[in-house]
Image 1 (spheres, rainbow, N blue to C red):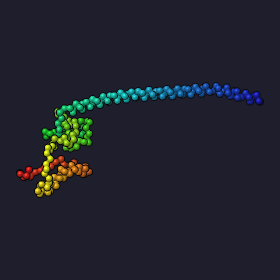
Image 2: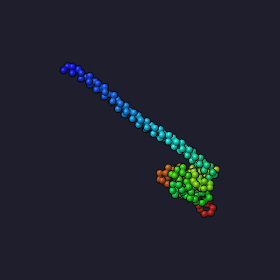
Image 3: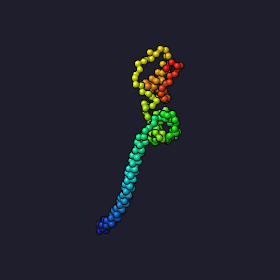
Image 4: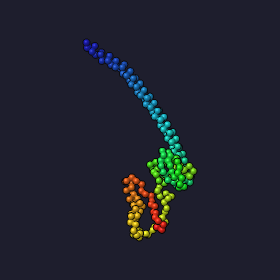
Length: 200
């Protein structure tokens, strides 16, 4: 009985040594398959990276061409006009300084939110397309005052109602412009004084 008990561990050790290499082989196969799968994913990601780099280079060339086209369009002598109405995302109604109204195309790079009625704009000389939005000071209807007058409201006798209306129409938009913004209306762009002959 004692000899049988001693022989058993030797048999178990031989069996373990036979099973262990097979187990290691299966692990090696699994690791190899995982490595191949990861290599395939890496190759796919590298292809995607190359595609995106090519696409970025293409878009950069397109951007440069578009900027060059915009410079070319804006280099043509421009005509100052006024924006009247937006028809859709690409077209609107404008009026030129000559007094004519046109249905024209709007440059795609312009901010549509800034195109409001009576906005000063630059029109292409030949096609009359809207190519730029001008600041209010570029309005051709505004005349520059070369000398500052020294006449005050006190020098004008009477006409208190008219003086108050002039203050509200001219001074208030310049001094308290935020009031018009809060109310949501555009301030007056000027006043027209009229009366019988001899009052001008």
